Image (cartoon, rainbow, N blue to C red; front, side, top):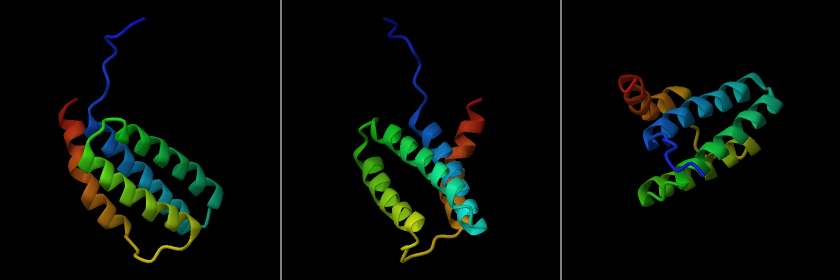
Amino acid sequence: MQKNIQERPLYFYVANLGSEIQRVLVWKEKGDKESMQTAFKRVISIIDKIKSFNNKSANTEMDILQKYLEELVLGNEKTVLNRSQISSFFNPFALRVVSSL
């Protein structure tokens, strides 16, 4: 059994989460429910990975974000975040990934 498998840092997954959330929003805007659901499933998978780091503050944020996205996908969102706001939140994580390459 190999134990030296390098796990990616938390910010890598957060950056990828931002990209995938953008996909959910794009597909929702276009009215493509199937593609939106597929992207949403990837979002949940990434959120689960982020939660596996057992970072209490990150887990709290992921719980809030997941609840919001579930409402968004169901069409019950009360607060609308636009793609620009989502980008503003996730861009620092993406920049950190790029600078680490």
